[in-house]
Amino acid sequence: MSTDPSATSEITRAALPAPYYSDEHVTLYHADNRDVIPHIDFDLVFTSPPYNLSDPDRKKKPSGTSYKALADGYASYGDNMPHAEYVAWQNELTAAIWQKLPETGAMFYNHKQINRDGVARLPLELVDPECTLRQVITWDRSSGHINCHWYYTPRTEWVLLYAKQGFRLNQLGVFDLWKVPFETGTEHPAPFPLALPMRALTTVDFDTVFDPFSGSGTTLRAAKDLGKRAIGCEVDERYCEIAATRMAQGVLF
Image 1 (cartoon, rainbow, N blue to C red):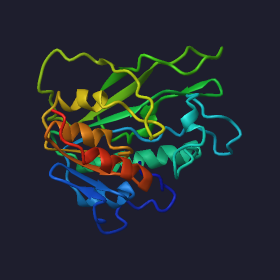
Image 2: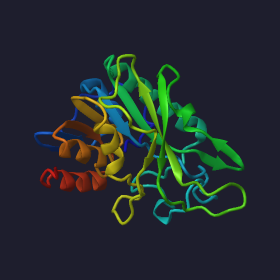
Image 3: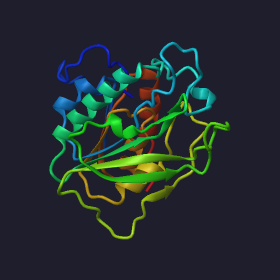
Image 4: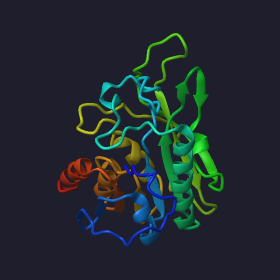
């Protein structure tokens, strides 16, 4: 995941860095996604940014999860930006992605409702308003981690589909409720299961999928297993190494 939003507000900041890992299908950059996006081409995005689960002052435990692995954020990122800065960061990123997508392209943006101080914050505010929302897909994780009297235990997240006018599915009869069990027991504190991006990638035609917050490389792995091209960005070298190890394994299908 890219986690240096305070460094500058400029999208184009540097030349394209050398890949951390590269093979026939996958290119992974150990870099801020803003240094990569201006230099690459892609026609599909599947990503899940950090959720900004904690308060900036760290006085409250993560809101929206009780998953202990995220109690202190990620390896090099506290996941605790002031909310306005977080919204601005995500708006800037999604605007840059939207500008790069072709007229048949789309972005799958995985996020969830965050309840803080009794108020629900919806991820719709995180995507630049110029992006066209095609559909809200519900991810049923089949489990929930919160038990409290303020609200019902959440077991779902959203996959927001933002699509250009020419975007189409390559098959009929695919429902908007995706029942995919949550993944545990990995080295990354907040992985999404391989079956989640796989569900999206198998229902659309594309050449190259981009994940600006590639983490342990799940989207990249799904694309490689399908024989497709994928590009990822990750600022934490620890997660890059995990992803590179996964990519070095043979194609599963």
